[in-house]
Image 1: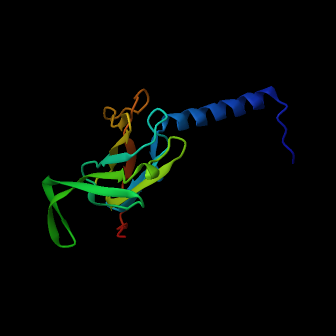
Image 2 (image 1 turned 135 degrees about the vertical axis):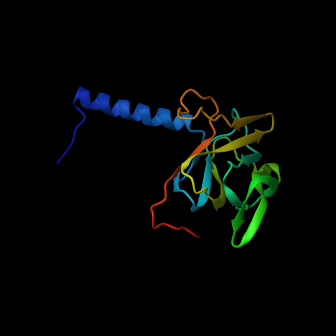
Image 3 (image 1 turned 90 degrees about the vertical axis):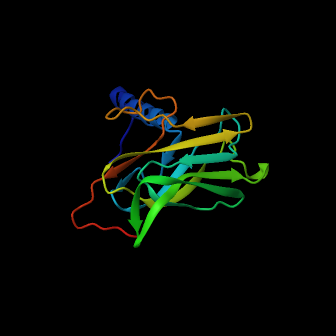
Length: 187
């Protein structure tokens, strides 16, 4: 069966679909490779950075972790140094039989030299993993990109129950879904 685009209605439908897809992609400045995960599971967050700061290369990426994201560990990147900030927890938790009283709250990747900067015309991934809270709901990763003469703060979180529509610099959303009764994930 051959499909043709001679119909004005079909052409308009295709253009409308393309506009919707490209419009959505244009608003998604930093995204997660997998934007949904099961409560209580271990999650690999692959943050995809699609552009720099108004044409400039990115030299530093800072990720502020959402409350409830436990035991975060970043993946090293060749040519980038890592720093990790830990803070005391308001509510300690137990992991592998040990009580955890402080945890990772921020991870920073910094290019070691200009040759490792992420050019505006390229994209890259920054990866970390950790355990999700047992309670389902939205988790917001706040990400900052720093460039030679500026920065972008992807840190806006909408009011509970509203969308990111209209936000200029939305944080990165992970939808944490309820676990099935028999699920227990451990990686």
